Length: 559
Image (cartoon, rainbow, N blue to C red; front, side, top):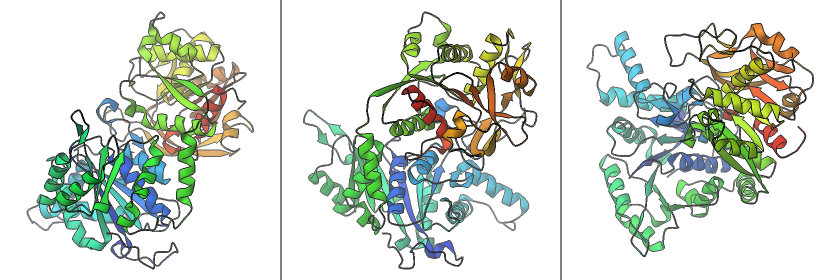
């Protein structure tokens, strides 16, 4: 188990090998996917921080893609964008939100990245003519990567982290994850067994008319993990209801762990209760840390209580094209929730498939008209575009609070050009290359031949062009803000003067003063579009300003 060194008190120290200081917690999963490894890993990160440790996190994804950038949201959920432009797995968003971190592209390891690195080294001759194999070359590369990135500060302090949470994607037994499991088996000897803790997340299903909790699936997955050379120190067992003491003792006996290290991860009222649930069952003692070393957990508990006792419902219509899988908009959902906590309202998201609005008699129009606010998130492709434009038109002409993110800014600009400027057929060249009035155009510096990593990505400055406006006030009066981007198209600079003359003002632009980043509609309670993705930097106790503005306006408050 982890034992905190007396020297780890948060003060700056001379640079040393990360092996001397770092504590590692490896979170793996068994039985089936989707059990909540990401939430478990994030919760452990919170507990490590509450013990006064500086924390970082690593997600291992066993797929061959270099990153998540070219994956369909239906395939893998949202693509989470990091400050350095890395396109990563959505679990990195969980780590950042829970632990208030800013991670980097190298905090997401994929099979594609590892094999590319090893093959490149082989081509350079780094292996001096040796036969390059999975063991030791791939497994060594994984260990080196973890060791290197875990020493990089992720909390803004600039100081080396003291603990690293590593989540292994997939399920134990998958062929794809085998090299990573072997690398982690070796890693425990590299760093010292006292400096690493293995946490295995499993499922305890309920069967039969009496609701008997079954342990056999967990027994089998632990047996497989132990057969691969890793003995779990802690079991986190997903179940609908709390594990009985009998089940705990049975799991401990058959899985070679202490009964005190069997954690029941049963259903709770909100996600922020998971760290509290684990703490109350003794995971801090199992990890060898003092979770009461700071006042962080008392504040966390107060937040969880607040989330359980929010006020009246507030309805936000989410108009998108990936509404069949909410993970496609995970960060947007979380940002709306964070803002709802700040205005003390219970968030209700009304999902609207954008293409349905192209039929004026579709029932989704009733849903849209009943909403307190409208949000059009980012996306790619032309499906549902006309429906999104209609939603923006409805919000603009009926004084309904509106927030457009990335594509949501672009379609609102198109709508304005068509219906206010009278530019019939105005469109984006993404959807119509031959539009007579290109309101949105392809960015000149972007590649048209490679999709991966070629967009305008990562944190970029947005500079306010006016002394006072709604969004600037929401950002605390800052003269500029740094937000994360992910787009290939932008508002046509040639039309900006005409658009602004009619009242849609681009109050924020990039450092060149040419690229439009934020618009506001004059005389509207809240009609705002942002070219960047503010959802990626929202935190439970620090909601994203554009989302906060939407929820305030939808609540009837003046922004």
